[in-house]
Every structure is written in C-alpha cells, then in structure tokens.
Length: 287
Picture 1 (cartoon, one colour):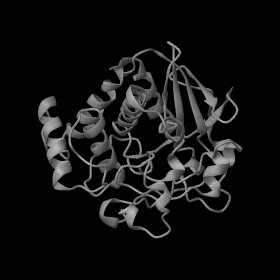
Picture 2 (cartoon, rainbow, N blue to C red):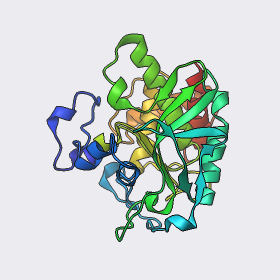
Picture 3 (cartoon, rainbow, N blue to C red):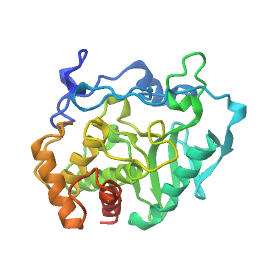
Picture 4 (cartoon, helix red, strand yellow):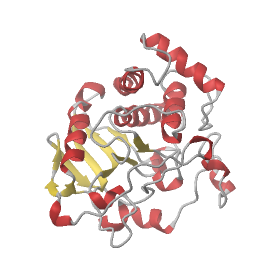
C-alpha cells in the first residue's frame, strides 16, 4: 500500500487520518503558482499504485502534439479559470476526454446546493517532451481546483487550504469535496485525491487512461477506488470506517450498509452498483 513505501515523512501523518501521504516535492510547490506546463502534471503516470501494493497495468500514456488537440474555454458552458492567476483561459483536450468531462460538468447543477458558475483548474494538456509518462501529455487528464457557485460559495478541492478548518465549516468543505470527487468517479476509473499523496492536496486529478471513453468499473485492487469508497462511507454516510486504503472487512461492511440503504446490489462489481454509489454520493453535495 502507498503508506508503506519508503521516503515518507511522519510530519504529514496528522492531516490524513490513518494515512501518511508522500511529502511535498518541487513539482507540487511549483504547481501552486507556476506555469501550466508544470502545474498540471503531478502524479499521473501510466502505472498507478493499487491496494495491496499491486500494480495494475493498462494502456501506456502517450504524447500528443499541442496542434493535434482542440482548444476549449468552457466545460458544458462553464468558463475555465487557471487557478494560479485567476484568469479565464483556454485549455487543450483530447475530444473524447473533453466530451466525457462535459457530461460530468453538465450534471453539476443537479448535485450542488447552488448552480455552478466557473471551474478553476491547474490545467489539462502539458508538453511531455520525451517523457510521455502522463495522460496530461495527451490531453486526457484534468486537474480540478475549485467549483465556484452562483451563491458566492464554492466546492474547494484545495485540501491544502480547508484542512485547517474545524467544526461545521470543515464538515461542509469535506462533504462537498468528496461529493465532487465521487461524481468524477462515476464517470472515470482514475481519480486522484489528497489521500493519494501530498502532490494532490491542491487539486483532484482525473484521467481516462484506464476507463478510456467507457464507464468505470470497480476493482477492489484499485487503491484510488477504495479510497473514495471509504471516504464517502465515512464522511457522507457516517459509517465507522477508517481511511486505510485497504479493501478490508470493515470497509466491505460499511459499503454493504450504504448500498443496502440505496437499494443497490452490495457487490460493488455488480452491474450498476459502482456508478449508483458514486452518483448517490455526488448528490449528497446538495446537503
């Protein structure tokens, strides 16, 4: 499991219950305020870390030239804003990936407490040079920082900012965060949150390297999917489960309880169970 890898810093243990994410790296620090070419590419290799320390391989990331991709200033009509400078900007996407992101963005109004007005991001396509080790290099990845709402509030993926809140404000920020993350999980297999590592403390990363243009399917060997199951059970349904990243008995019980409440098959690999759970979790963002 990720927490067992070498190079961990004990100083990062406290903000992540039961977990010790990777320490901040130069890439992350640059991503907080530097240019698009660096800010968007963190943690997006072709062979992700999975539960139990098992690597699952699929299609390798590729490099696509900037000129081969479409430029977009919106997702489902929502302006895209570059998080480091606050400016509305154009970003380049693979057409299929952009279309699937638009489907997600188009449904946000139904699952948020107020209509969305803007999406802030650290970017999509970046120049991979000779590396070609990230789906950002193909325009098939997107880093979401915030969803700004019409009522003046926001859904913040900036865990680096809201983790110091307490009481009701922390509960609300955390509930909105995991609701948006779940909505992305309903449409993509690979979504990285702050539970993955410290490089993702300021954004949620999503790519279609695993699910491509199809619907995602649950695997108990997928660490990122186990992460979101534990988080939504704990924070959205108040289930007594720890954020261990392991598909253990406590996690299976918690997931089964929630799935039963939703009238879904308690096997997350059964047809409709995964997308049903993630869609229901996304809808809890209205609360």
